[in-house]
Length: 244
Ligand SMILES: Nc1ncnc2c1ncn2[C@@H]1O[C@H](COP(=O)(O)OP(=O)(O)OP(=O)(O)O)[C@@H](O)[C@H]1O
Image (cartoon, rainbow, N blue to C red; front, side, top):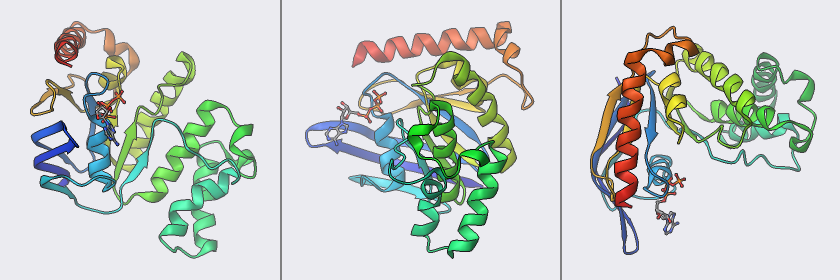
């Protein structure tokens, strides 16, 4: 079943066209990465899916609302505790406080943040804050999570740890995930499919099926098949950048 679809979508910021009759869809439970040069309009696609921006024509369909959105910066509210930050979407959905707290506390415990629930975001490491932001997105979403370069600001080791962690969580929660990244290895490691922006304004998205099993290991990235796909993706990104 389709969780999310863009059909013939056009969008422009004043005089700057960004999307030109774009089509794509994502099936329930899929992990799809969106890659493309900086400034080509990837975050704009997220804004259209969340409803922060409206398409000028075409249709954006989300099967189950609302979607969970995790932006590039964690955007945790500094005056709220970790627990209170994760409760925000449940407050918006008017879930009774006791039930909301039970749900959030269980997630914080499960994600190794139980001891930090009454701390403020400033007391946490970057990796911990991203996990809090992920719980907040999980609490917001019925099905679809939009993750916009969630690990780009983290050091290499923390980034690898969180990639492993996200891969496990995505499968466990059976969420549909659309993930923006500039890191081709990250896209290959995490995704079922990769959509590459080929031109601006965006018209076609090139689809790559990742040639790895569902149960994958980081070492699988070194196989010749995956490395060949990586080279093709890098070539497409270089072509796309020249057009910007
Ligand atoms: N609110 C806005 N008003 C006008 N132009 C905007 C607005 N937001 C983004 N843009 C422009 O639209 C284009 C696409 O921006 P967008 O943030 O979607 O790109 P992106 O692919 O996500 O970039 P990056 O990879 O650097 O995050 C850019 O040229 C940007 O300057």
